[in-house]
Length: 207
Image 1 (cartoon, rainbow, N blue to C red):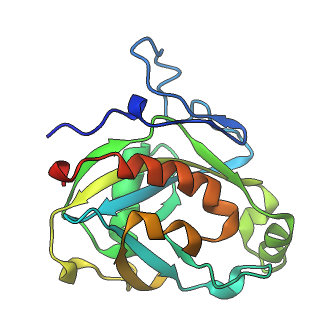
Image 2 (image 1 turned 180 degrees about the vertical axis):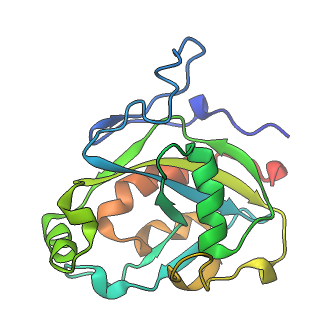
Image 3 (image 1 turned 90 degrees about the vertical axis):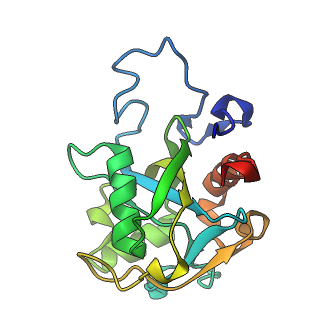
């Protein structure tokens, strides 16, 4: 089972992070977990979990009141979270997926080779900082490594109660990839466009 190569997916410059296909000539420094990540962006990971129908697990945030602006109802997203100090991004991805959704039955299909970045809108960052959140204003946005996994378990495995921390989500569903972008908070949509294009490149036979 061979997934479509990342080099077959269209890439573009995403804010301050250059997204490019992996090269065999990349040095050890270029391959390190922090290579290419802007220091003023929090290091994170994101996960697209695909079922056998090619649909992705989409979850609704529990903390909708944290979001500012005219469109607070765009609260659906993929599982994601921060990379702990000294942690490899892939390890962080499997940990976050388990902590947020309870899912352990999955296998890796592929990963986007570099960091994708988005910045927080100023009004959003101000709201978080005023509430004692937002990492004290330390970060302007998030830099994410993204992974695509194939779900190998049963739907009953999904558990949103939160493992090791407060629940992140209150609802989940399987969603066709072409229906997702309009349900995501607007400041994340450029990143989601890259991620969805990559996830859609895997043939159904790989699932």
